[in-house]
Image (cartoon, rainbow over all chains, first blue to last red; front, side, top):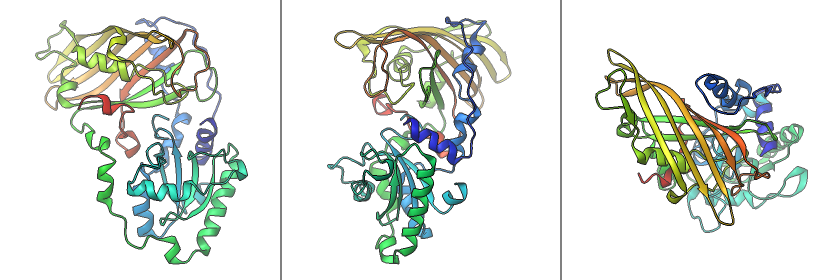
Length: 85
Length: 299
């Protein structure tokens, strides 16, 4: 999966920058809420693969490709590659 | 690569169902036609996961699951080259595929709560072990469920317990360790030791209700597999009473997780901090994908 995600990032021409994990606080409090939230939420480059206009099902692509007479590029994983894989 | 990709209709899909020999769905029959032709050349690791260049007819043009982007580019170029040599009858299906056929296997998508609340769920370790160090899922609430996250007649200062069924659903199917990969281990009801979320009405301005969330859950599977997660939860949201919709939503869960999971690529069972954040999902097709365990919602 590591490799596939990396490839998709490249597909989107994203240049992943190392995300610094300077987070040091363990317990969730009102004071560190924003820090934890920001630590967990994806950085823009991590979401760059989602900017590709993926059809979210293979069948949808078959229908469109048949009509357009185009080949299909399919990314397939156990679990949907665009969410829980 | 983008230029190359534009030559294709680009799609992403799960292969779990389609790769099963017993599955007779139209997409699965086509999928297996090319998936079983894969070779071990050029970095293919075998199995059905990976990238494919295929004709609408199901004719395999090229495939790869290599980590090397050069190989992906090669694969795409090889796919296009083969495509160019195929006569029309080999490229295309003899008759147009039926869009309605998908209704039988895309039932979960139909459950999308258009007038409810769709949340994006991101999980990440405090300490990065390896890439990828986060994963993404979705959590859905029907309109009445979303409304029940705050009191019926909200007034500033009100405190209200979120219905237990919803908190249990979060604890069982969303407060799970999928940081490195899809985790098929969810928590059964009897694994819930604590599950509580309290909503406090912070402000009411016209139709707009501002609330905060505070709570905790603890789920623990005992026996040969010891797996658990014990987060504290905090959050905030704004709900429009007139439109009956959340206009903003954040829920943050932070706590210790322990144990391994089924297929989640976790190698270290020792307790470690993990955070999970729920925010409102977008509206693109990729943001409307069903939660991994929506079939267990009881909808």
